[in-house]
Image 1 (tube, rainbow, N blue to C red):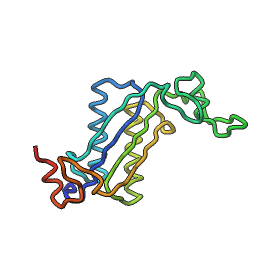
Image 2 (cartoon, rainbow, N blue to C red):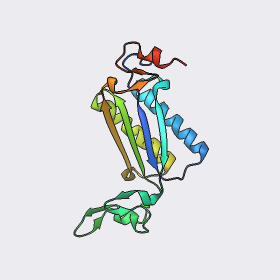
Image 3 (cartoon, rainbow, N blue to C red):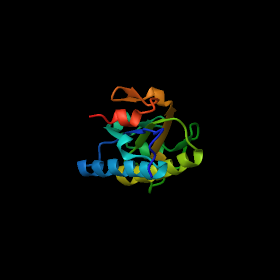
Image 4 (cartoon, helix red, strand yellow):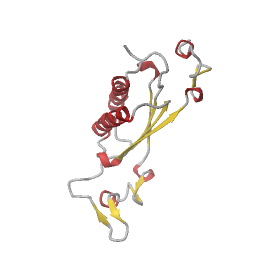
Length: 165
């Protein structure tokens, strides 16, 4: 059975390049929700996904702007002085993805590792970002810092009250 008490209420907020069709976004939202339901044993109606599209010029890594023609090389620099880079001709950058997850409470590191591994696969499939261009941040917070329908998550009857239409 899916988790019914002490729900984690994840909000997944994705920043990525504008490259996905409406249908691809629909599939991505479904897949991120499904991955979260399965990995965290959660109820789906408390999982929210937001997609924010940003132009490549609004992304940077290793001091380089993503819209620069040399970004594939420059964003993979591992030594600032020698300009050593792990880039290869076969490793272009088609996209970047930054997934920020706000979630209630804490859970085991093994669960986080499994979750971010699967989310990375999902994001790579839908955004075409390579693993080194996918960043996932998990921010854990107390349930009292989360509210829906005028009730904070600390309330013992939160799930019922949050579902009032």
